[in-house]
Length: 212
Image 1 (cartoon, helix red, strand yellow):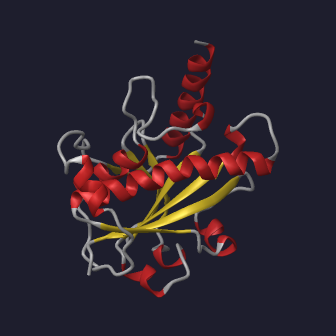
Image 2 (cartoon, helix red, strand yellow):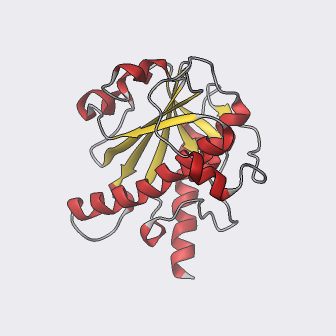
Image 3 (cartoon, rainbow, N blue to C red):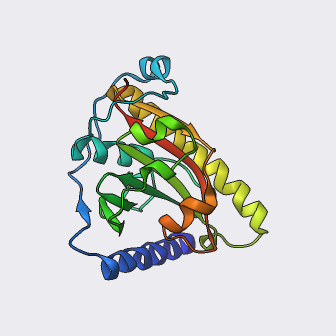
């Protein structure tokens, strides 16, 4: 019970931050589809890494479904579609689009504005990065985690990010989209473009789009 109270306080603080910093440039997403999709075993059979993308944009409905599947809330308690150690929920999902940089607010199902610059090309070091319409970057906020060393917290954040990464893969396989995860990110270049502080660490990135 005490842990739930603490988590609700954290979620309230996060929601308050988003409200204070909200602008007309925030994007309200449509309600995600939480039923249907490809059967699990068929989805697993179709799961693969893609490195060749069309430039065709995803619809807002597709984006909403993808983000919810990756790291959305699926219970009134605020718990998510992927597990996290001690329910820290330390990972944030940054969304890089042609229109700018956003961070996914799962509680409000919206994209919170970070920057109006197209920074997608900096979400990786490979040539194909520039072609995908969506770049997802998982960023761990170590300040949300109590106890232990920074290296220990970071290790836990990597494990938790792996669950979210697999959700992205499975959703894309189910919905006929391609994705590819990578750790090859220039942290020194990308971090300031996402406006990260010293407690926030880039963990992993995904390109998402239609397969070429």
